[in-house]
Length: 283
Image (cartoon, rainbow, N blue to C red):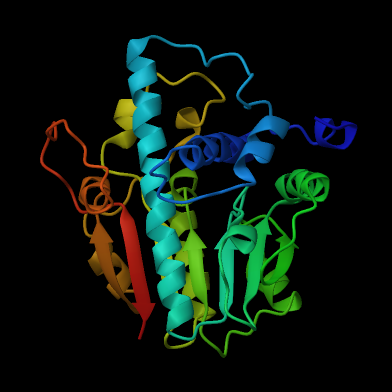
């Protein structure tokens, strides 16, 4: 870790982005990887979660929970990669990553000419990320624009100032984000997205599964990712999004995992609720 990276050491909610990078780095090493993220290892190492880092503490139950979370990260990454590729194929050339964290899609995916990708996050993770990107001499495959703003503030104004055009379609990604926001903040976020979305815009969301807080959050260590989870997804996510003008489809991790050749071998412990992987189109 460089002195510059040490000065912006991950902390709080955005530190979980480094944990996500670690999961993506481990997936990248698999022979049958669902995606390749060459920068993930550098992000994880710079954040203190590289291969030589001490093992995470906890008992067998904690280890199984981490495995479950890692599985969800891998499946949602593949799901949203596919959604972005489909949006590009349909002609969408504006991409907005909300709470971008250590997302490296601007660098690892093939983008059509003319694509503009906006990464929206607070200054600390963007600064940390920039130092790693400089160290790795990474070159984006599209026009990449960072927007340093708190999503609880006037991020649409900051996004517009950075060059986003709401008059043309946008593909929006909110990955691993909404579970950290209270219900009213989630509603406000969706209303703002909708107001900036021309017809034909697309959206990919990940929502917390019903009961996830009780399973992972109740006994979580203070400061851990699970201890900061707040929001549960609606009982009817498709109907919820329809009320905001989006035609949506929901998918479960189990369903997508099986489709990607990563089936979950254990039977569900309870009746499966509507899925937490959401794709939507603005009509």
